[in-house]
Length: 189
Image 1 (cartoon, one colour):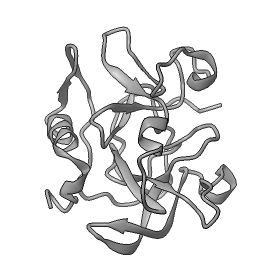
Image 2 (cartoon, one colour):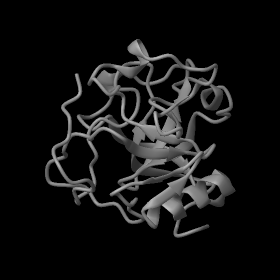
Image 3 (cartoon, helix red, strand yellow):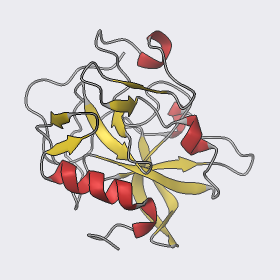
Image 4 (cartoon, helix red, strand yellow):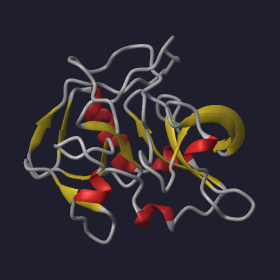
């Protein structure tokens, strides 16, 4: 365990979270973020929209951006991606806008932790008995829910975000009580 998080998420994610906690992360070049992840998330009275830019980190160490491209459109419908559905920012930082199919195909359990949002809540791939992901209709306004998931090698009931195949794919509204980024968030469409 590292700060209450299971070490199974891998050394890259632990390093990425540590760098994010310091306000910086390096990929092909340093990118300074005005946000730090919460290690002890608490729900906000009313969630706010995500802003453009980083919203989390996946367990393969790749940064997760929100679902929008620079023009405020569904990035998955308007951008070009590699075989893992990732691509570089203009500054060269490789990132995803959704959970990568390269991660999805390697999720052995019905509820697998695949990353963390910057507000500190886990991002999971949850499969029902038929092997299907949840739909947006199964999730709350933040694109998450409280359900039984594997955390620290045991099944626990906890709030988390879920990957879906529907827009916005992961995190819609951060639930964390702090507003982590300055400025106005973008309403996702």
